[in-house]
Image (cartoon, rainbow, N blue to C red; front, side):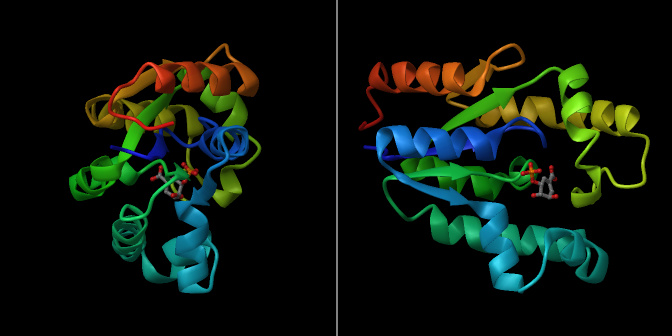
Length: 176
Ligand code: S3P
């Protein structure tokens, strides 16, 4: 029986906010993979990317995912690129129900406009084009990885949390 929920989706999809709210509501531990990567490295994600490179970041992401995916009773906010290495999803899926929070590119653009400095993949680039290109490549990966897909474009945090809780109580593979 699965006891974790892992939220996946593009940067700006609201994974962290929704994971935190959901964890509180269903009384589970909230875990953010990016924070664990930063804690292990002793520096911010932007510095990992600029000083050590994306490959080092992805390696750290794989190590953290491997460790976390063995635990129980957590709501896990994953980084947007978790799906780039298939092994991450294979590991997560052993004990986690994977939920893809889908958001339209227009809303992502609005949300990410203010935070692009903290997101190395978007920093210094034309955001609209970068989002479109990354989404085109990643969308099929998010969909393939997900047990549940929610289009959250027009939903607020509370509605998404309620929707997830209802979905969980109908899912036989999950122990809520
Ligand atoms: C990334 C998303 C970021 C962070 C890193 C790489 C990505 O997490 O892991 O900057 O490849 O999409 P958020 O999705 O929480 O922004």
